[in-house]
Image 1 (tube, rainbow, N blue to C red):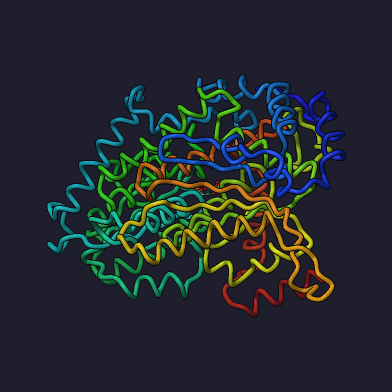
Image 2 (tube, helix red, strand yellow):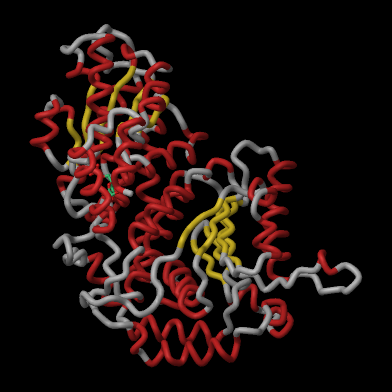
Length: 512
Ligand code: F6P
């Protein structure tokens, strides 16, 4: 991996000077000066049209950002990732979640795992695989946390329109009330429990799995566990110790990071819910974006453009956060999913040389679906004092032909980006209804919410993260920051039996 401090590059210094020169320019003037701006500052690719024209960037900004990409050797870093080099140096691992969706060059173990997912999901959905008492399976409970939960749940919700199999429930948090509420609503005789944990050491997942197992035994029998419990993990030893056989275990590999594992058997429950063909389409869509990222010139490369623009706002405008607003209710879980992938990846302060960085890294991601968000926090976007670069995601076609509502939804999306960019002049008569405008947005138009396009969209964000990480000279694919919390929690648990609220309060009082 290249190890270049971006602030030492010529482009960085030029961007600093350029920022001083352009920081007060207005987006609406960019449009007035350049009739072609909408076209010039957008990238059309397959079913995607990514419009970055309503950002605070000029042709010169673009030129300097591309120069920055060159100076930090982004191309070399992308090649290093796709060729399987151990770019996650702190864990000595390759980063190859992209290999999970490359059907033209598939590793035999990946192909075998997909075949097993296909066979198993089909058996479940056509009623051949039955519960221990002979009932067909109608529910799968996915037990896992972080990447072993957020991706599968997000895709399950996003592709609700394509459901053809079982319903899914998710147990992630160690919140006994929530876990019990899920269990109360299901029939153990027609339910499979899939314990998803790459490490099979994650305390929350193991505690929840054990709790569910005890509940299941009390409802059915110990013997029935072999039929009703499955695992997805890279840790065969711990899975066996838990009581799940090899036959009922799907593999994970150390070259797939947890937050990028959706494409592996971690997506098994989703595969059952939407059917294998749709799951395969999801993978194929992601692969198409991989090919685009790895081969398109940087000036026409969607993840590169998004990553560099984000660096521009983070490091020069000193923006702290970015919002994502999908004008699509089905994408409501995209935000927590992105929060993990973006912030667990780029929330780092030590660079690839092992030194503390002297510039900002990983932004904070937040958001909600539009139009709901318009009636919640858009006030701050429009008239607040902060600059919050915002992605607007919308689909040209509706899935259920509700054209009237869909047109309203789209009109709202477009109107918001327009109003944020243009604003409304100040008038002393009506000072409170003036808008400065000049609020940056990127609009991601996609033809339709299909499994394939969803795959491409998710891969687009994955690669954007990497582009930023490469520029910031950090390791995007480790997550040492999560370890400390885990260690402290273990220590506290050993010191005090946190069995009820009283003990917790006692502990906190002693610490004072
Ligand atoms: O939160 C840290 C993390 O390591 C994530 O990266 C991962 O998705 C999650 O924990 C769950 O890990 P596992 O799949 O090993 O249980």
